[in-house]
Image (cartoon, rainbow, N blue to C red; front, side):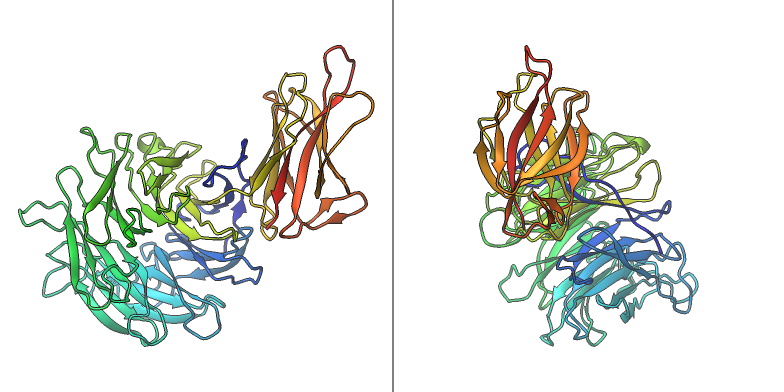
Amino acid sequence: MKIRTVLPACLLMAAPTAFGQSLLLDLVGNDALDQYGTSSIAIDDINGDGVPDLAIGAPTAGLGGEVYVTSGADGALIRTLVAPGQLQPPDSETYYGFCLSALGDQDGDGIGEIAIGIPGQQLFTGERNGAVQVVSGATGAAILLAVGVNSGASFGAGIANGGDVDGDGFDDLWVGAPNAFIQGQRRGIATLLSVATASYLQTISGPSDRSSFGDTIAVLPDVDGDGEDDLVVTAPGDSDPGGLTAGSVSTFSGATGALLFRIYGTTTTRFSNVHVAAVPDTNGDGISDIAIGARRGFVAGSENGIVRLISGSDGSLIRNVLGQNAGAEFGHFVAGIDDLDGDGAGELLVGEPFFGGGLTSIGAFHVISGGTGQTLHRRTGNEPGAFLGLRVANLGDLDGDGTPEYAASSYTRNGMTNGALSIYLGADAPVIRQCQNAIPNSTGQVSVMGFEGTSRVAFNRATLRTDRLPPGVFGLYITSRVYQILPIPGGTFAQLCIGGDLGRINQVLQASPSGSFSLDIDLTALPTTNAFVAATPGETWHFQAWHRDTPSGASWGFNLSDTVGILMR
């Protein structure tokens, strides 16, 4: 079992934007080479704190891989799931937790379950058929272990919740097996597994021998109008009718398995190394769309990578989003996420892990507007070999503000190849900028307040920051639930903008040479005049920074920043 290291979040220096830039949790594996963060999903609230929790895969950790059920509020480890033994014990190529999917409640306890892909599971020595395990979300107890029927099939290389296709009231699971034999050929398959009965409801085979059909899969909300979710499958070894082996991506009816449409790679946009994801409607037709990440796609003669955004209704091209850096593998991994910039269109999360070049790549990931194809936000790794963006994931709304959070994994953190998963807020906390009549300090500027993190009290992850301070000055924070402009006697150069039951956070801070200081605050123990109290959702708390300052012509003095009001949730 591992202890997860939770690192402090980075700081937001300005007023919040329409989409998130703030780091909510930074979770780091402790053991080298365990590939922590290879897979990640949000699951039901397991520990009863009102916040959805997480399942995080590390497919080379321990004996055959591990999955960590983790608090979505603070990153604390709830339990560790380990690879199952069968006739053969798990080993370094079992890859337990290579992929994950959340399922609805299967065992009647009111908590959804966790499906775990194990593409290297052995049935007999050397026969890596692969498997899928379903475990109780509430207890971690095994509910089902389904093993691939073909030797070397890699059953479980991709999994996705298909919804209740057979009408029994329980979710069914699509499973990819890219090396499965069909009709004497290693075509690959995608199989719909009934978790309730452990039976196979339908099987779709690959289009050609060695097509690796099922290498990655994604479920697409119903596009053909039959009431069932549909399926997108990659076949990186497929050839087009003209004989070009550049891979294909196919969409099938989830109800019948009928082919809806197939798209082939090209000489410049090869689907031989490709990942797919469903994206909430981007072109206004009411149908979810498809992102195809082609990390080997050629742009201006280099393998920069391309993401093709495809209409889910008919397979037509909506737009290409092009990588800007040679060899950086833009599109290495893709995910769709609900609208973040307010234009009504879904967005894309795109990993670019080889940004920076070679074995010292820092990596990057991008939040791309589905409506325009423009970059809304880009974040890069902060050390050589980080490879940020190896995986990206939509985690849904963790903090209850109606906007989804998202994650990106890294290979290296703090010089160790442990793996890490960084989770970002989809929307920053609601910040009200106040005290417009604040008085400039001796730098000639008003000291400005900032807030980073989430204002959801259950998370208790919030940081105050003040910038444009005179370098080296000492200061502290004051707070109240009342915004009120009050005169300060004594002729000082300052404007107090909070009143009522005013409290002081008694931690003295010193401004950096660049004129900033910051402080993590405890939302469950905010100071008032006579007591510490917990913030209550629906309240607005106001914060202001007091700091030493020496105005022109004075021997000493103090000043106050502007004010921010934070609506607690």
